[in-house]
Length: 446
Image (cartoon, rainbow, N blue to C red; front, top):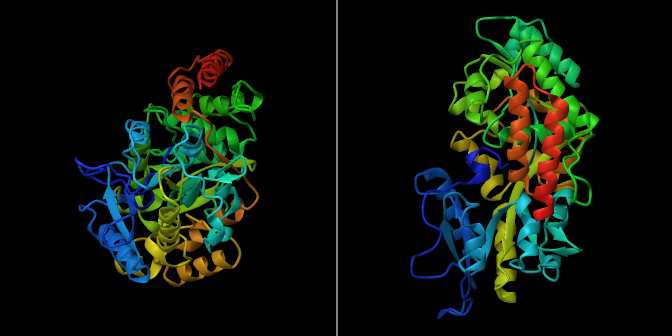
């Protein structure tokens, strides 16, 4: 699943390409410049982000007068309903946005340029976390550049922890600890929910996957050919949800929730905990009535792993060598400069009252990461101490990307999650056996 914050997805309202022209461009313009088209420009309705994006393109063109950047907006940055058709029809931009889960697919259908001979000239490439670079590396060849990354964690309400007699500086590190904390929070009454989870619109399957990863399990085998949900770890996920819902009564009576429902609960101060990426925090404050001082973030309970996601850019297979070089320079300027660029200019973001100091995205390693974190800390305007447990705990977790055919698989797993949350007599053995067979069929067709 994609993350939910605007500055991560950059979902834009508009059209992808001019009606009478293809998105891909010819680099032989009358001016002699190398022309590249790029997508995922913020919409005009997002005035601040749009202005920043345009400012950064203008500064890039001043530094690279031989390159002409033509930006297109779109809604969303990548629409799954039209993505493949645009690629196959030659309508995709020269530099195009992708979710991590799409990288291999784009390579498999032969629509991405091989960047391997060119990345040696990309100064910042080696500073990007290897696990993120590897997502765009197929059979030893580089086909894309990561832009952001996120990992799942546990958002919790410090105020409710204190009211329930829990230590807000010691969030639950295991699922049994989370279960016990949820029961205490729910006991506060007055409609308070201890722990909430998604169970509809594929979001239940997404969270099942995250919870499975946290316990050391996996959704599909290493070769991507068989389901691995009908396992002790898979049973533990569903059993825990079932018992919290029916034995503990710590998840509330309203189920079949989606992300907006849970965010509303947390923002209103009626929810103790839920799983999410850090980008949910500003949404909870700016849209749902929450307060930064009450919202904290911990690593995934279980101590084994966490689901990661994110996005990046790939380059059209039709791009010329000159366009590829220009595109990599543009990506470096926009997204890969620690403490600078569209997503990293923290001083600029602070002036617009955008939240600065959230623990992610954390793209870089080594000296580049240190510089990025230094600039972020110097401009922070949120309580960064509330996220220290997340930063510390993530160091020991295995970072795992979403499974292949993720949305189809999530749809299957939605049924299992929703069943245990709405039926007290749900048969977990049968649910996982049925889900496993359906996932096997999905994998066999892919």
